[in-house]
Image 1 (cartoon, rainbow, N blue to C red):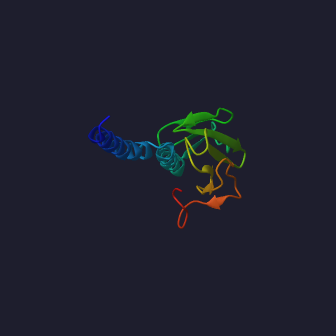
Image 2: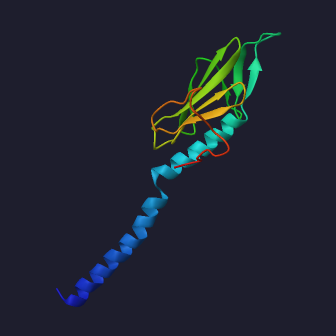
Image 3: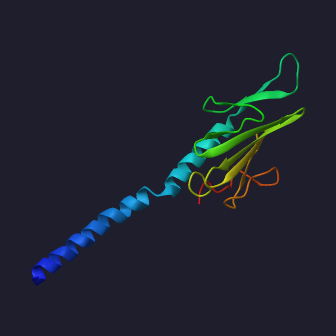
Length: 142
């Protein structure tokens, strides 16, 4: 094998790596996780409760920003997150946990009837009323 051929092979190999590495980084699962997280934040930020018939204080459904309606006891997957509505006589909470933490979403979220949105920065841990408040000073992504 000639040295010209070996040098050409090395150059082609280096060029191939130079092309493939950025593509692999660009298509990383973390990009998809960040995109899903942004979508879930938008959905939860404008969630609107709908109350039972008459003057019932009980929340029957909550409509998210994308028009999807959540009902108590019927969790559903949207944008890589498992969303669940928990309703009681005095209000409601919504939990949003990534289906595959770190791949379909980064943080878990918790929203209540006051409109407060909380997040859990520890990947794989569910957010709760005790989690950090999302908003000014919150980290949007890792």
